Length: 424
Length: 166
Image 1 (cartoon, helix red, strand yellow):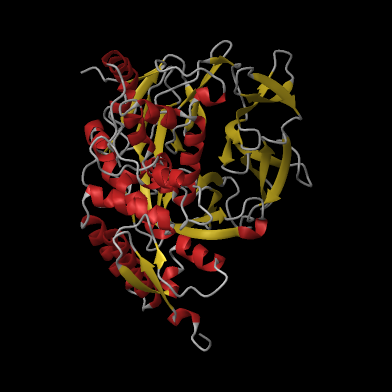
Image 2 (cartoon, chains in turn blue, orange; image 1 turned 90 degrees about the vertical axis):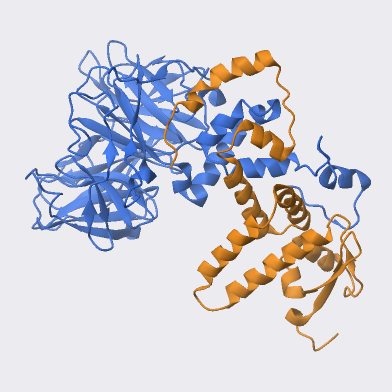
């Protein structure tokens, strides 16, 4: 916002423009900059509703690339809970699954006013969600030539399905903040049996670039470390996708990352596991409060959660919580860690228990409870309802935004994803 | 003027209607526009500073807000709750027209924290309201033709698809 240098000696023009604009009702009107400041503080879903309806200049403003970026930056900086985080899930065992979405924050209300309802969507071109970033979900259809599509569930727009290739092993979706580009990372095995690593940049001339091989078997003195999990975790603002490296023989744990901007790899240490811990239970990497978080099983009685407060700085690993194992967390004796999904204000954690039930853990007093989520309309009829188990559901957290494919040169479609209406 | 500490110095402000307000210089610091004027002046400012864009009603509210917030911040702990309660009452006490007038004044005087609070207040008011309400609030004319409106309504159908509000 412009500030005048000697405000008490107004030019007449300035005075008229800044103070005395009057509307049809004769009352003072707020200038465009002030209206914009107000609109930046409104949640994306409300802005989507107002965007097309109020007037032409609001439509231009709210649809603009700069406004979407300012809005996203502001809401992530002030309080990412303001971005109305949502959880999107699909079932990896259905051939063309629906995608169920529910509000992360409404799950934390205790006691809840009413059950958190899941709303489901369906599309022709989607068999999985690769990752989420800046309000986009990257959807993938790995059949034949394979298609990828960026979908913003808040605005409803998708990119067109882009020919991208079929089956990825290691993969991840993220944002190159230096070049303002959304990128997909994937390792594939070519027909020749060769292992190739590539980065795909979404844009009008979208294509793959082959980069140095993903070092999934290196970076450990005895070459016996391996990567845990297929999907890299994107850390906002760093341009990196991250995986855990573990050793089967000792307590070594590290983070392996690919920098989507520089297209290089690096590695830094994570807290070691205790020497007595069961090494067959792999730790789990997730993103909490915008940072990398690792959850370890410790001494068979509890799980320890660490948070990397400063990305890339191993000294900033901070013990966030100790979660004791007790019912309903260990109804089945499955050998796995609890998988954190979302944390509200460093107090309460939403996680998936080893038995696949979504639970809320209060990290301060250790209480756990099962949130009331109504997944009856999610179209996943072959799976138990969410409060009883996940089945083969895979969850992704995303934050609502106004970013659209048209902001980076890809035409926006509004018809690829539709609301799913369960047949009665 | 020597020997008088900065925080005790009083500044006099004059509104459009000619009303004079004596303001402690520690409070005047939050009126960044006024502070800039003081900083730019070569000599000590002794005569009332005229504010040709600010009415008495608005300046009075702004000073009330600042005085209270200074009090809350300098006092003992429990102030956060009291401050939140004061803020809620402050926002509720104004009509929409008074809210807009106050935003214009706070913007002119460059009172950052108050402007932030007022912008958020308006955002909270309008976010779930109808399009008609929003147009009325800002005094905006609908510049769409009926055909355009129909076309845009169809494009916008997604927005009413019932993703649950938090």
